[in-house]
Amino acid sequence: MKDLVGKYAAGTVVYALVEPDLKLVIRRYIDRIYYCRIPSKPEHKELVYFEREIRPVDEDQTANS
Image (cartoon, rainbow, N blue to C red):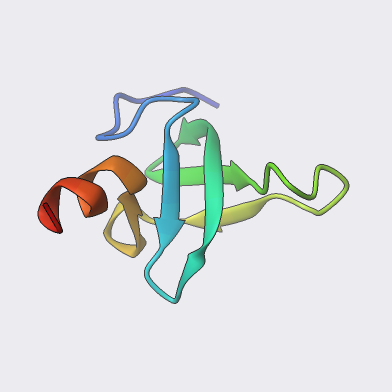
């Protein structure tokens, strides 16, 4: 198992394109997969996404400005 350099760093707040109202925090990036957790539901299982399926929250805010 190796961590690769992804577009988003661990700790980045993102959202999934399939559910934009749900904020996620990236926990780790391994083999081109982002492992994310839901900050408001720490007991929930981690969600996994490819880079193309997520966007950073701050990017969305700057696009609307």
